[in-house]
Length: 599
Image 1 (cartoon, rainbow, N blue to C red):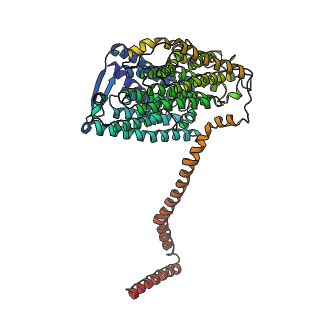
Image 2 (cartoon, helix red, strand yellow; image 1 turned 90 degrees about the vertical axis):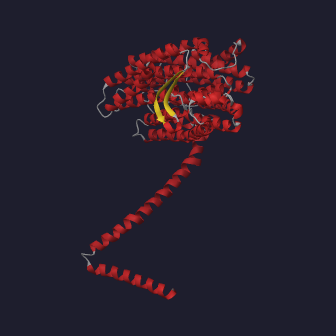
Image 3 (tube, rainbow, N blue to C red; image 1 turned 120 degrees about the vertical axis):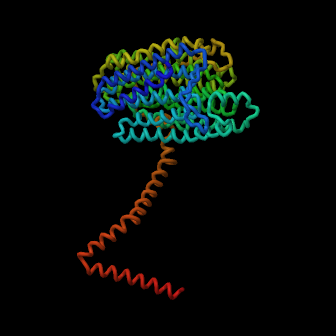
């Protein structure tokens, strides 16, 4: 029963807030929805306690009888982990939103969208078959569109929401094809039955398995913003900051990683696809980190960081270290959500200024936010004893011991860049000379209180690594501590931090004519390339089709209307009517004559 509470309390929250969507904002609604989310988290912990050693299946009823698909839930170690992470981060974000959205007229509607998003995310992680997973998958996509474009009156924000929606639909189409292929070849979409059949994979066509895995991975690429579907994530920062913390750090963007982990029985049988996933993940980790070191926008820096860390998770999945990928997903959710909420405090204090070159000296007026963001940055950089040290270093270690030295080298250099850009942000915002005339202030206690659980977990959750690996029932090559590798990773991360402090302690100039910096600031000109290849031709085609549509409409509806109006007016002017009738009769006569002559 506790499982049902976890699933349906967020839905109740969405319905309750939805009823008052068009009513004047009321903080009681925000508090009520937040406490419902807190209750869902408590029930997640209860479910974890009771079901941690079993795979529990719950059938809520028949859905598509012809295909034998039910509304079924699978509660195992993976889904229990995701349920706890999603409901915990959602609870923190709900309480934080009471502060962040307090002056927004759409306060009630915002909580309705948040609750609906959490409900869809829980369907995604709790479903026991691919089709119900896809329903949750599309549900979070829809809610993401609603939340990114929450301030849709701003055309730029609205375009960002549309970009995220369209890019995800393209990759989702590939995923849908993969699900169709699963049904045609396995005769079922149930995880239990599909993965049971995979135990006898010798009887299956390996090319079909490769194709299914590739199509599912394309779906994961879109949802987790992997190259070349990555551009939507940074632009999605146009949405309210609590949305970025919930969707673009802890939940929706990790859905692609969850899909690979959930389908590990399939991906472990297709080494070519898995190796491609690892290589692409390493590339994206470095690619995104390189853009983060030159970005000026506070939220975009954190967004590129998310992209880079998702690359780490995909590397772990591609190398078969699914437990390590899930562990990094969990720890990353804590410290990245904390970073986003800290960014929200800064935005409020700086009157929505996002350019880090126009900040500086914020440590004194915002000490608590500064300390919390420094803790999150240390965790992100992989410094002992923070959570990122335990999860990210295990990915590096696994790449090394599995003899993927090239991937290890790329990830190690990325770790250096991660530490560098994290503390570049910290130095420019909190310690560099002041570059503004604003009088910033610390966030309200409720916002800081909402960030506190995330800060605690960003510090201590790494110490649970052994218990976590025992809890997750996915086979994996045993990982021994290699103290030399640990030392190398730590030295590299510390070097990145020290270099950032040294370079940015006195601030930095915003303008620079360095061509490499311009390349990074323009994100390798990929958005511009997409504009030339896809957007501009699409605009031209749209203009042509619009012109054709308007012409056709005028021919069918407007012309007869004008003729009728003209004829009607002629009741007042018989002379002109007679002229038109005469011309028409003459044309008809001429036409008939020609037909008779040539017949």
